[in-house]
Length: 137
Image (tube, rainbow, N blue to C red; front, side):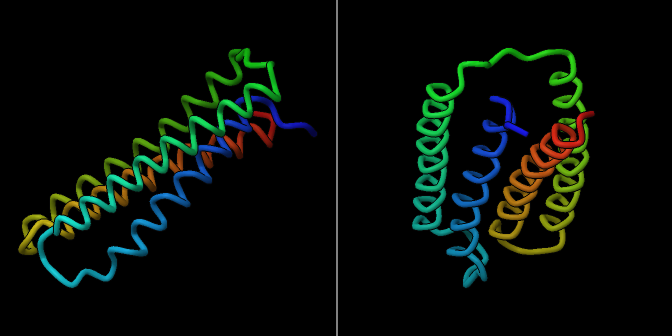
């Protein structure tokens, strides 16, 4: 079964998120300080730039190879279900981050747990959409 443009796009986003932010988290954890240091901010900026470049180039390649970019009601429903699951994960992450902000000193854990849950929420939303596309929902 051939992948649609939407599925190819979702795979690109998923892989680029995991690669860019997986690398970022691998470099900054475990923390050796309670506060975010300037070099960690630079690493974050590099991860964001890497993510943007990978997605721009990847989507350009996908668009050149597959011109069928139309969506239907099924794609919209799948996107809504992915957003629902993503929102639940993000809400949990915000609650955990706020809890950490109260019980720990410094901003390292608070910031990185919030960022990790944002990335995890995106991954869950995309994985949900990919699952539903493959299942034919």
